[in-house]
Amino acid sequence: IDVTTYELMRKDPQLAAGLAMIKMPLMALPWRIESDNEDIAQFCEYALKIVWKTLMKSLLTAVDFGFAAHEKVWQRKEILVQSIKRSGDGDDGEKVRKKTHFKGDAVIYKEFKPMYPSSVLMKFEKDVFVGIEQTGVFGMTDKDSPQIPARKSFVFTHDKEFGNMFGRSRLKPSYKIWYWKELMYQFMMQYYERRGSPPIIVTAPPGESVDSGGTVKDNLVVALDLGASFINNSTGALPYEESGSGRENMWSVDYLLDDRRGTMFIDVINHLDAKCFLALWVPERLGERQTGGSFAETNIIVDLFLLSEKALITEIEDHVNKFILPQLVEFNFVKSKRAPAYLKMDQLDWNRRLAVKEIFIEMLRNVDTMVQAGIAPRVMPALEKMAGILEIPVEQ
Image 1 (spheres, rainbow, N blue to C red):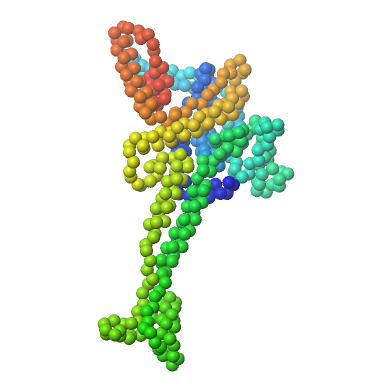
Image 2: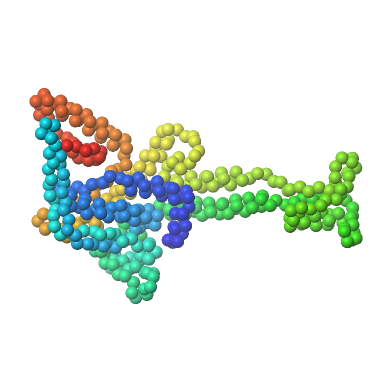
């Protein structure tokens, strides 16, 4: 499946909604940087915040196309990275303590320049990725195509299999369904077009008639001429000839009616829409107005969706930890002070989040009671880290 087809597929309303449901929760996820060296953690978090929103938006296009290629653009900048801790016992007022983690000239990311998927030509030497050649750039020949070395490249691969850096698009399993849905829409519109101008049936008595020019014609021929005149004009004239009973005109005009089959097309399209969501691993009930099914079944579907989101989060963390953070540490800290830094994102487990919240509140109550009683707790929970996960401000 080529990039042009994926572009058409992602414009489909149902697939666009499914892709948005996959991406939007991740765009809003809280994240943090962890490291054994607090200075490195604070510095990397500061540097990553500058580019995070645009990076995530571009990075998640890999869900659509299977991969997202970028050029790393660096900048030198004077920065000051500080953390602020507030404390106070009430009578003495609030105390603010600032800790400086980095001060001075830093080499940080300015942007991650995205590349259109069809313009990316990945280069390998002995199965090792060595860089990107960007082809089809406007105003440049193939000989002048930009060459981006691996060190300046960032390629996020979604669902990588067998070392294939082009990955696997989430849209790929839904291609056949999308194709049949496009055809079904065409058939449906053709059907409605025919129903908008249905065939005209003209009833005529047996025998012959004389037209205005004095020509004798069979009544069926006259009826066909009348039908054609009704199609080409908004008005027409019918002869009047009583039936044997004298109660009705034997000349009449009517539409050829058929069974109403429009709902049949709608049912098929709704079925294909549901299959599109299934192919994206998005719960069908999030996008359908239909009702039915048990609460337990819905929970299972949502849990499966959350598992697929967790897998995508893990992919993002792995790529950032391997290809983005190490260079920030290498360029800004001496070798003796370097320590690995890791991106940690929330796992979208809302039940776990609520449980942590309850445990956090209970711990605060118990610790406060023990301190007032003069008993030192044997194990002190990492309340500050828990508060950070829950985005709850705490005082030191």
